[in-house]
Length: 117
Length: 119
Image 1 (cartoon, rainbow over the protein chains, first blue to last red):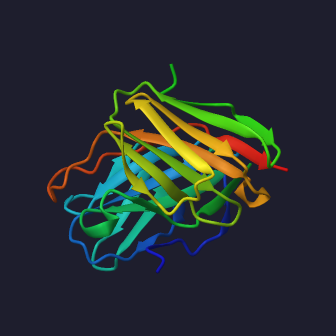
Image 2: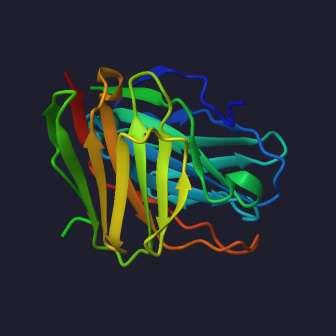
């Protein structure tokens, strides 16, 4: 079963606007971590932000923030003040703390973001 | 020096060829990973090495053979590949994680990938 769901295959966003990328996850493990990665057309997977299941506050890293709603199993990425260089594929990923999935990073299908001038 | 490097960046090979992909990490990590990214599929974990020991083989065909001579280097040896093996192969590294619910999950850092085309 798919553990990470990204329902938006693609989005256009205007430069300087904020954009929210959706991610929902499925786990029964109380210990897990959620990650967002950016993949430009060059192929490299760039780590953006991390949220632990026990973290009390939403994670923020510069223009990136993670809207973590634990009860809804949602971990949306918010990019503020979009820049042309933000055009890329964005992946949500989860790592669970126990069981056979321990340590494995499981990825969603990704959302393609295109920032327009 | 970039954290995780991969060579070559692009590779075209025939089905009877033997080639190797190389990954090197300069981050002092002790776990390394191979992932495969095919078109229209989520990223798939192939192999995991912790402290040079293979701890995960995600049902990968034997035509892919990993090698981890030390904590900084990881290879993927390829032989008699099929056209459906054409993909982007990504290497990643991280600090060894622990089986402790309270331990912070360590982040994986990726290399730029090798784009492989099998003819």
